[in-house]
Length: 449
Ligand SMILES: *Cc1c(COP(=O)(O)O)cnc(C)c1O
Ligand SMILES: [Zn+2]
Image (cartoon, rainbow, N blue to C red; front, top):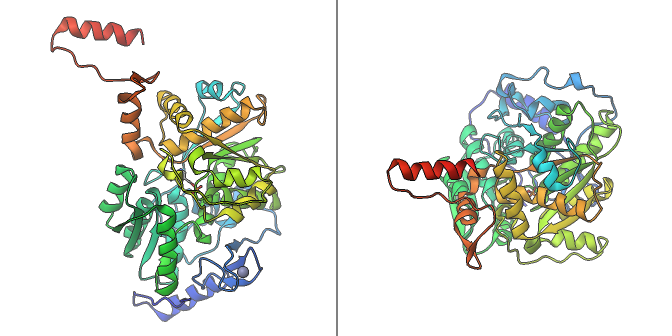
């Protein structure tokens, strides 16, 4: 197990001393055996037992809404993540790497509320596609890469289904640290790969799926001096908590009954449970919303684990159109289980057709998202139909990524036939002669929908 990471930049010894002191003050704890570490250690799992690590946030104090967004260093003044510093690990200000992440919209559109089966005004959508690289991954990446910079990492690396690599590539470029990215050899959405290449990361396509890529990378980072930024990294999960903080701030600190999110590697699920417990401890919310995690039918090991009463966990070989949640052995499973248990949460599945159907409704409302994001609305609809979520309850659904991440999914939905016919709602461009009468017919069609 390596830990020493050599700094690359010449610095004044005073700055380094302060930095080391600040890192040493961050408490990190193994969730399995309780062993304690500090922010100066560069582990992504417990060296004693292999368990997952948590950053420990002091919560034996009251925090008020007015405590957020104050006294931020210039490096993070506009960040929708670092404004929640009182509930984040305190990193040296000169290490912060920010691209004004967060600050994402919370939409209401009652066409979507009806689709879900809830009463008017009872559904909101937190659109994390409105981040600098167009997915929520930026919220974790600003913290992960800032920590990497603080410990003097010479190279950062991740395995990714696409969005983590796009985000890592951007933040590594911002920090001036080289990045290595492992992606599966098939089914990486072109938009995500394009971003990763353009931002300058070294991209390695491996002959295997995401789960294999992550396994390989964890071996590599154990043997070499490489900073791993997958969502097993506890610092990344700290940044993702701010999705919850910002959503609740936007709702005047009134918790909804449910928070519905897609589940892939289960980083968000883990992070959201931790965020909610901390908010309750410092007095910012007085009751816990329930988390509902939605997995794609073909990639649902956590849903099966939940259905077994968390007795039997079996990894699967993942298959789904929603590539961002195409994960068969989620790295954060024990942490995610803790989140479901603490919030009296729920886990269910949706089919690929349900995902694409819900996505079309979200897109058609002028909001738009990538396929994995639509699992949240599809899953909420299922839970309302099954009576798990009641129509008078309130819900916030998470949209995790932008529509332009996966344009192939859009064109396939609208252009490709299913069993010889177009899908209902398919919107195909029409070719007409360059003449006014033809255009008039098109105008009439457009008017009548
Ligand atoms: C990463 C990702 C997910 C899955 O999130 P987890 O935290 O791994 O469960 C879902 N949707 C999109 C768009 C993502 O990028
Ligand atoms: Zn341990």
